[in-house]
Amino acid sequence: MSKPVYISEMFSSIQGEGMLAGRRQIFVRLMECNLDCTYCDTDFKKSDVFRLESRPGSGLFLTLPLPLSCHEISETFDGWLSQLPGAHHSVSITGGEPLLHADMLAEWLPEIRKKLPIHLETNGTRHDALRRVKQYVDYISMDMKLPSTAGCPEMLWDVHALFLREASGSNVSVKVVVGDHTTLDEIHRVCDIILSADAAVPLFLQPLSLSDDRVGITTAHLFRLQERASSRLADVRVIPQMHKMLGAL
Ligand code: SF4
Image 1 (cartoon, rainbow, N blue to C red):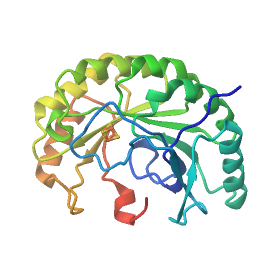
Image 2: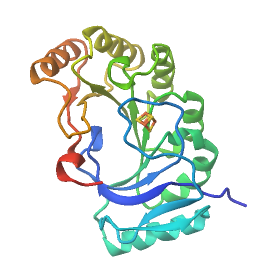
Image 3: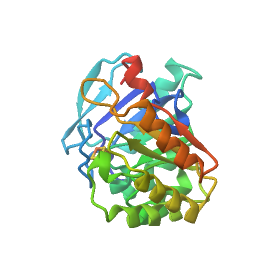
Image 4: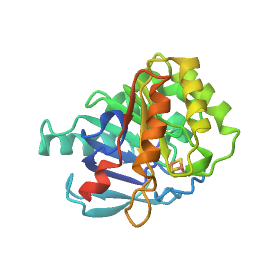
């Protein structure tokens, strides 16, 4: 019998970050996270209910009981894809940290992937779990958590390096959230990790979004960081969180 599916929400929106920015996706958010980033604005706590958008893109939600079966989630996908044919580019598996649920993902991603390509959004700390599911994933967006913006401990550098090594060879990109306190040394360390795994991996610098919707970095500092990263890497891009500008989910 297949494993029950625990998710916290499922909705349709425009991807606002990283390599698939601008693509319409079905977002499936999984519960729980192993980090505690200072800028986190996501409710990922464990629950026995989940939120399902009543119509894809409506922003209106039903609250329904968990768990779901793999068959039920597959039927919901089929319904949305027939309501909006061609509208969706891919499915974004996000969190929380989705790789905390590698067993569950290994069971239902192959089924979902028959319908749309799979985009995994991860905090880049679970290289062992990635090994178990990467064969079912088409795009990997990996965060590297900088002490200056996420407030995460220094030891994450080594964890991120292991993860990116495991991900290289897949279609992976790296995103870092940068703010006024981000240092050139942090950008150097990000570059070192990318260069030691695969120099062609794209790096996205994402300006920190503050709670009052302002951006938490001056343009001059953002340019300094971009110039330093671009002096070492081939593909560096700056993209703010687009979905927030649109007022989308
Ligand atoms: S990794 Fe993501 S979900 Fe987890 S605490 Fe950080 S921002 Fe929030």
